Length: 130
Length: 135
Image 1 (cartoon, rainbow over the protein chains, first blue to last red):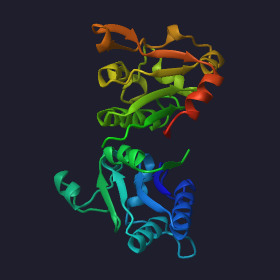
Image 2 (cartoon, chains in turn yellow, orange):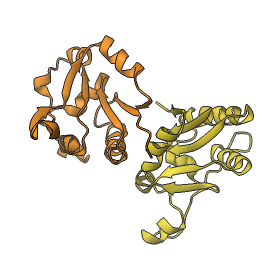
Image 3 (cartoon, rainbow over the protein chains, first blue to last red):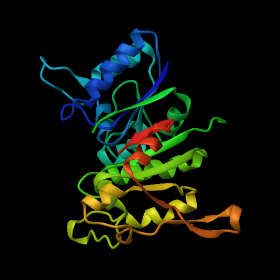
Image 4 (cartoon, each protein chain N blue to C red):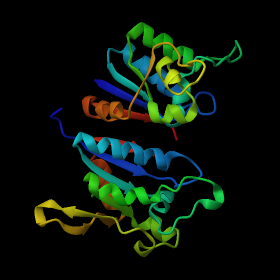
């Protein structure tokens, strides 16, 4: 089956991103396709490369980057939600006069149309969050 | 993109206090460009999103309540309000903005976009959705 994933909460405060990660990993391991993972609301905070959790805890952002690297996942951070919360790639940082980008490897920034397209293209869209 | 699916947006939260209502509306407005069937449901505290006379000056939040009136222009005209949620909060349809659209198949007559639904109708509506977005 072809799944699309939407994640509405950031890392750590909510378990939603962890659950979405576990689901995505299990789906891929069982031969399903992940059309896209779309990060919205505080979910965009999963796309930061600057999280440094204690070494005995998981690093949610890094787990996503690794999974995306392994399976060539499309990790999309909503641009409008990201701008509000200070998640930027190099182009965005330059455009807004910010010193540096902070987006984690394998994440990309794009618009809400990518979420709607995922809803249209996938067999099922799963929403994780409150 | 020739596939047409039924997108149902469930709005469950108050307009302020969290960002979900505002960012849900942003998805609806962007999504309207994709020519899909769109239905909006307001349930639980979500019914407060449509209340008239919102004033946010005191809390320093952006008042986005006027944006709902533009939905008709985006061909978003299937808006369902859960009757029980209104009742539980001491509200009626009179407390809500009257959202309308112009019907192009009926000489652009102005018609109401809003429909009161009970829980049974709501369940059927959700069961009928291809894509369900909860906010």
